[in-house]
Length: 271
Ligand code: KIV
Image (cartoon, rainbow, N blue to C red; front, side, top):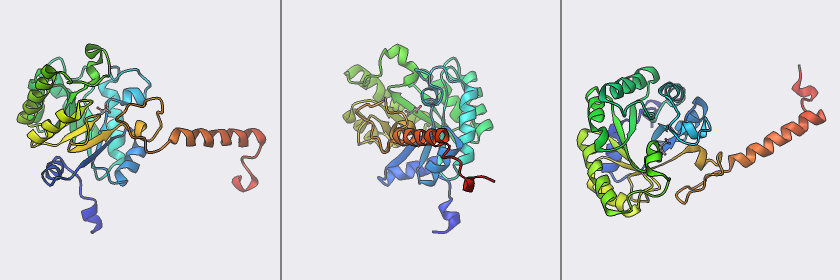
């Protein structure tokens, strides 16, 4: 493959083609230039600049405190690092729930000030007007149903959602509504695998699961969780591929010892 072909940008249309061809979609979060570059160069399909930055970058308990300005800062850093994958940015809590004008203005700011390719919004029927206005403005929208962390105080816990029939039926209807509105993909978070299977089979647009089982058209994980940067979070759905925190601790302790003992720097490391 030529370098030009290799550098071809993944688009929302690519994701639809992957689903149609029965090929899975890989998505990971990133929030800064350096990790975005590493993840992109590893061959990921989609980087999500998640509002989970509120937790893993800023140390907040929930995703609610992160602002539109913070998301724009993280997303523009990611855009400078990732040259090949599709970059989707979360609309933070408060930037779209009040009305369609505010939602559209927030989405336009993200697209204009970051250079990202799409936005993601949590919710179903209740945010439909805003979703339609944003899509009408030419901005691709990824929907997000199931456990939607911006509503944590309504749910009261991070437990699996839509186990009961009424909530499962609402989720199925919302998924269809979001597809009909023109969303290009749908994140399904922490719902039973059989429900995610049914939704994935009924939609033309790809579903991307987190804690939603193997039948989704793709998977997403939070980078800090899968790399073992954050080792306290161990839900059943998480596969930890690395234990970076252990390696960082060993390296930092060694550095401290070297500095304290006078072993660093040596003459060879001096000018
Ligand atoms: O903010 C985030 O990281 C997300 C993923 C968990 C889907 O929304």
